[in-house]
Image (tube, rainbow, N blue to C red; front, top):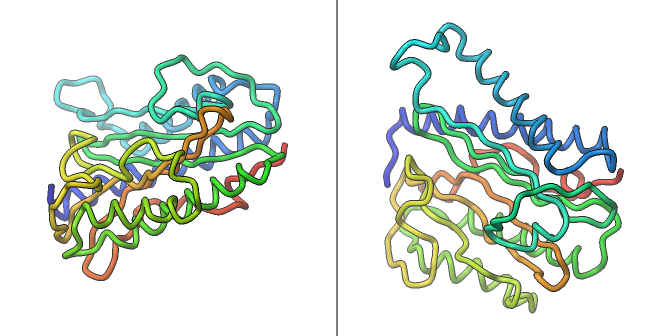
Length: 251
């Protein structure tokens, strides 16, 4: 649950690649627009990420036993109604279209360590409820990260994060806890959820994903980052913007 300096360094390398892949995917969407599907975005971004990682590893990738191990690289893109589910089980093959929510997400491990890098995007136009849900979700994401400091309790962070949705009248769009511990197992203890009384200590790491989902409307928003617990506040290790300028797309 508490990471060493070496573990944090491996996580940061993976997260740097997350950032590069998310930027590539966004650029691919803006360049190709409605000519492509979310499947096309996934395939193109996975190839970009794989080639980037392999080039960085150089001679380590030689096919020999015990070389280039502990690596996994995946990318997901889902457009339209599939974004309305927290963990959908359907195959993603939808053509991009105006008015759709689009989620781009990468899950990478290098040497067994990685994290999450998701961005909740939307192709114009957006109605008022969509704009409100995106804004509140982003506020929840940033607040959860800020609260992840030494001495805080998991359940209290979870409650404070969910209170933002409640205050905005969006509590019915909450379907899951704000975050989970992040490490070699991916989802691991402790959890930023109501009822988890664990006290945070320095160098824990958490996901950052208090999503909001409108099943009836057919859209949802779920950013995620990797948050590093430090003394004064939690620090987001990802550098991909959490802004309208990055996430609200005009094709």
